[in-house]
Length: 224
Image (cartoon, rainbow, N blue to C red; front, side):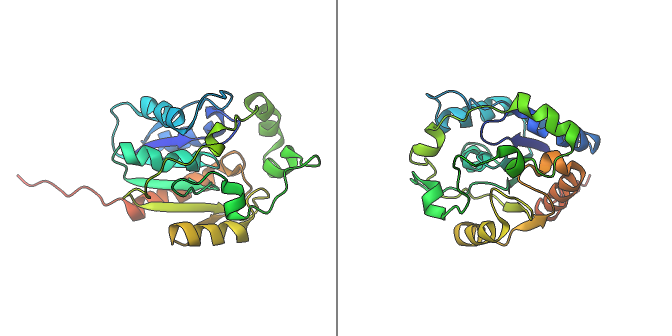
């Protein structure tokens, strides 16, 4: 079985995965979540990465999943630890040394005075889950998105990208183009919005397991 390492996005916490984690555990996997220091103006990507590494500890057979801003952290974890699979989920795909990801990718959604985070991020999330979400959202410090990204090159680990077709923050056509240009792969697709782990957790877990089983080779049988 695998250890799923689930990295949340900007302005959030580990609650983002609270519907996904038990479904993975039901399948026999270990799940590691953490709270990134999203409100700490002094914390950069080195600190974010260390929080993830501390949460992982000595565990192995890692499947690392990064959502949204978590995509900045995911490859940095794989630079430090052996990883069986990286999965980017509606995620930011960095380039080494990049300082303005938004401009470099041509992000098409304006974040202005009329920006409604509930309608953009949670439009397809059930009402009861949406009601809980406000307690787990807060300001995102700018440091991780302003510093030159410390990635040297994309890590030598199998990488897949999961795109949600109804994402209003990272529109599907734009995401497809970014993924093809930056990773040279075709994204795997699922129905849902930017916070698909809250709106379609069972469908997401099924897809993650499909990707894992199609990517990670089973251990060879031992012979006496």
